[in-house]
Image (cartoon, rainbow, N blue to C red; front, top):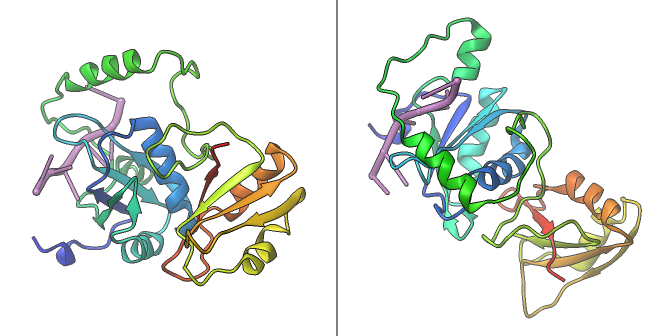
Length: 227
DNA sequence: AGCACA
């Protein structure tokens, strides 16, 4: 089926994702990246053999999904251009809300138990209990496959249009308390650093401006800088 | 390439 033939759906299907990224981080990053289009109800990603490198993001509105599919097509995410379509099926969380949910009788494979074990062993101590993180604002988007930086007072901004000036960024970021300065260099277009007085203030600005678009093609991608 | 959620 041509991807154009898939009828609109409030869930989008994403493929060509970087398979090296850990599942929970991937989900948080997708949440951050797609929140700009609307309210996200659920993000699903599995690392099973068939399903790695793919994810589903469900929005509260179909229009949000449509915008996401159009605007984020080929967006470089963890160094790979993401490919987006509408999902083929209605998300379980939607079906449940509508009362039309019914259990699938597909062969429930134990692949996922294997997956669970593997992720637990490769990640010793993320002792936050079972991740009931739906609807909770996620930790920072970490764009380049690096280990996530702990919060600090310096923000790293990516995906800026090359015409961006430090004045423009200052206008945006100085609205938030603790703003100190913008640092940019001609030598590296598309990125900038923004310094705040402390990590709480930088976090507030990050939350507020994550995904902010200077042009429709340039949702800004904000993470904590490496120091 | 690959369309699931327990």
